[in-house]
Length: 289
Image: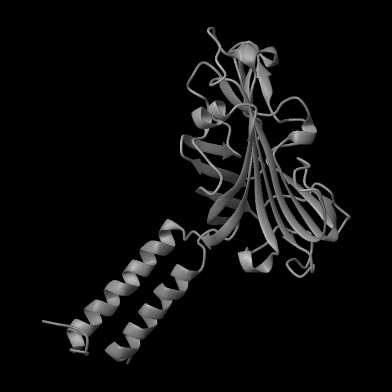
């Protein structure tokens, strides 16, 4: 018959192991911090009005990688593309509702930036709540949301902001446009985000598959390029340079951490509770009555 000590050790060990293992092995979530290196804008007032950022500021965000997504470039082990939506389906216009409908979801990879004046979300189609609709850039399938994995090859980020690199690279490139219900002719804004993780030695990845883990120390650099374009004609009069223009910023990541799933956090709490209860019952050192 098992002793109370043996039973406790079994339960405690099971809770700890379960809390360390992700409940859903396909979704990997990371939080990050990044420092803004530089800002470029048609007008400083527009940047202050839209972002509230200056060079040297620290921003935070999240990355979710869905490893169940399918390689859209089969047969090439040095390069792979993973899309959020089916080819040719970055958005579908519904003439009855005068809105762009979300096409079939293939996977849930996404990036979000927590900026001083709001969050930039890339990877989820949502309503803007201001008479327009946020949709993936519908102008070209080339700019549909995607994640690229380069395994030991040369690669240029799709925005062109980072130039050409060689070795291993993980690149998130996603574009979101806000359009009025009338359609593409009334573009209100367009946001672009481009993440590039780069390892010049080519030791970060063993293949072109989405990584099962991501550590900042595995890469020589991890950069962010963000761009916002608001056409002047999309703004109701009177027009000021604070309400329209073009801005962009470059930043580099300074931390990248795994975000535990809620179920894992709960199991960890159970393990701690078991430990406290066991110590109280057995009178082990470190407890008080």
